[in-house]
Length: 272
Image (cartoon, rainbow, N blue to C red):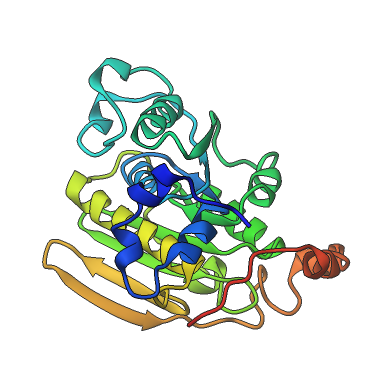
């Protein structure tokens, strides 16, 4: 059983006053490792809210250096770090905000060479990558290793959010068999939009980990933040999906992985 220090009990006291969010829920949050990709206006802000909520460990993954046009939305950054790797500054800022959270910074993008190890190292993934190449890799690895994934993306004033639990819900490939045209590095963005989505993304992760509220499972939340229009859509789970369907490639080439997953002790995600 993971214990909370007197400092942590005081730090998280106000959230433990919420109905169904007791000390046990807080200890559960501390026991989890979250993988956060695309640590920018979306991923960095989501990581910040997980850190202040008391997640036990964060794995931050992002290649590339900070640009001046990142500064309208990347709240973990400071002007003097423009031109430097952003993921290390993100780690430094988060450690100052909450020194009780263990943080690992990975200066890289999600690739076929690192995705398996990164996903296996975490209990939950927040997919905030800036392109669908990385998102597809994360989706496939999360399905393969039965790791839940919070899927969040935005473009301009529009955004979407859903929670994917392999074996229970459809995956990203079910959701988007043809990928949206939100796949470019230089896109229009207002910081408050990425920040709004980031807060909801972190909230989804906290809900899923602790069970204190029902997460957004098998539903896609779409948002037009220019008009403040929100809608929920049911997500179809495709039995013929090439990633998570009954005849998915990873099952065919590695049929033993299912028994390995079932035999390995894991956190239980129960919907309440």
